[in-house]
Each structure stands twice: as structure tokens, then as C-alpha cells.
Figure (cartoon, helix red, strand yellow):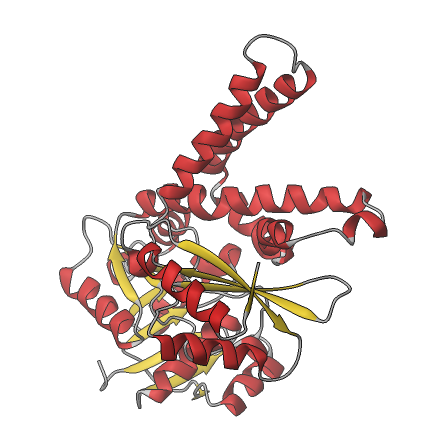
Length: 355
């Protein structure tokens, strides 16, 4: 792959990040973008040079509503190239490419790196954006095996994790794990508009976790949801049933079975969370949580992490929260259950404050 010339169409977050990652591997990257300002910025960042000549692989990184048309144009422009895209919905784009450019459709292979940030544009790009992230490749029954291998190699060279599934399987999966959560988070965050300053001042990490993705680009999500509406709608309908049952139970707490229904939903939530793959994609582990109080000052967090490393305990996950109105930070550390007691004792003996 290192001998290939790769063209990236679209110098936004994903396109520029791809360019940065590929050029670090010494690959000849050409960039094409409708906005000359964004193109110039991506080039100045080191994501490649302005595209010219022919290419072996073309990666289309434009908005979902434009993807099929741009893919068809690149297939015609580069008659020997494999063309892929990074859009987050695959089946509709594949159908549209086949309709627009049936004579070139075998040289198109959809893909979707499951990576991103709340920020967009070339200024937010990072060369390590794809590190350890799934990169879904969606061949059709007629896709040459060699094309699939080329995209697998591309993903692995960028330290991503290639996963092969059909476009329909992909769209069904992202409807559940990405598109439905986006809508639920946005609906929750929209309710915050009715809160006053005093109420919002009590917000904790739970609300921040649940509403974080609500800050995503509404225009981009409108395109994504429009292309996957047929798979998102049934999930939203089932979610609506859960909400309606919750509402009915809360409004009739004295009725027989109301508390049981509430408890059942909360319990099903526990079961659902436990099904999310854990660290490194392995089985979910119920880690032990320790919360350490640190000063909100330079070096405090570094000192804590250094001490834990010296004790010989591995941190499985970490979250930092600030206490409103106080000059302290709350460091939530998740460790293996068998290490929790030893670490707790060591921290306490050495003057660290545990909640």
C-alpha cells in the first residue's frame, strides 16, 4: 500500500485527519476540496498536497447527501482507481452509486471509520483519530476480494480495526448504537432550555455524560438520519413505548404493578449496559470505582497518576469532575475489583483523600 497514490476528496475533520495519518507513513496524498480556504489549511497542516494526476485509491470524505454523486464523479475521473467513502450510512449510498454509475460500480467499496469529534473542520483534525477505532468495510456480493483486502490494509496501517459486514448490517447496527443515542441525547438536552440558572448549577457528571453528543452538528445529523430513517424509526418507536410506560407508572404510583414496571426498566438498563463491550472490546467487567479528591492546581492529577503507577495498579478507566464552587477535583478511577482494596489502603496511608 505504501507505493499507492491516495487522493482524499473533502478536507474536513475526517479527510484532513486521514491525510495527516497517511502522510506520516510516507504516502503520497493528494487533497481536493470545494473550499479553497479549507484546502489551503489542510495542506499547511501537512495533510497532503493539492491533487493532480491519477490515483490508485480515492477516499471521498464529503457530506452524506453529496457522497454518491462525488463517488460517481471520482470513478469516472480515475478509471483505474478503487473509490471508497467514509459516510456513516452505507446502503442508500451504494444503491445511488449503482444507479448513477452502473458501469463503474464494482470499483466502489463503501467504508465507515467509526471515529470523530464534536468539533468539525480541518482545524480539529488529528493524525491519531483512527487509532484503535473500528473501520467498517461494506462489500456487496460482487465486490472483488482484492478490494476488500486493500481497504483492510489501509485501516490497519492507520492502526484502526477493520470489520467487514454488509451495508444493510452496518446501517442496522449504527441505527442502534449511534443514531438512536444521538436523538435521545438531543431530546434530553433540549429540555434543559426550560431550566433556570439555579437548577442548571446543580448539574453533575451524569447529565454531562447523557447530553455530551447533543452538541454535534445538527445539519450533518439531519443528513445522516434522513438516509437511515427506515431503520431508526422502529427503534425510536420502541423507545417511545418505554417512555410512555414510565410516564404511566409515575403518574399512577399507587396502582398495582407501577413500581414493578419502573424497577423492570431500570433493571433492563443494567442488563443493556453490561452488554456493551468493555476494554479492548472484551467482555464487560464490573470494575471497582474509587473517587479521589485532588486540589484544582497544576500537577495534582499527574502526582496522583504517578503514585498509582508506583503502587503497581492499572487504571482501567478514569473520569475527572470538578465540584461546583470548590477548588477541588474529583477523580473517578476504575480498577479491577481485586486491586481496589490494596489501592484504597495505599492512597489513604499516603495522605490522599477518598470519597
